Image 1 (tube, rainbow, N blue to C red):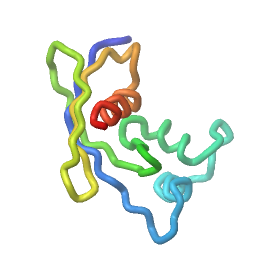
Image 2: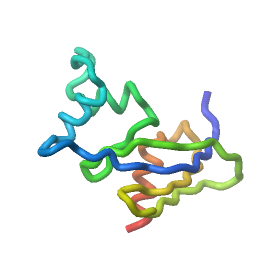
Image 3: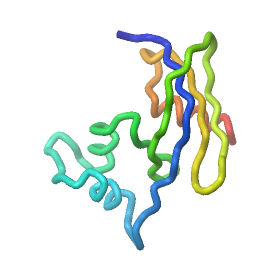
Length: 110
């Protein structure tokens, strides 16, 4: 069922270990073998843990959020220091996904 959703929260960068690639980092976090339904660990992680992780500019972030009620679309994000961002997004979830809402907030910030 589609509905308008409103989230407010924080994206916290997950620091890579040594020379770890994003793909290796996603594999480490999943801690399981790649399922045949996926072409990469990044795709697998983002699907299996939808709205718990997000990738932006090749950086993996964990998502901490709460649901909030309000009346208009909102796409806000701001750097909060220490490798993290605070965000607030409100959108109709039939025309936009959580990942797309976060990307739109990053795009508006530029």
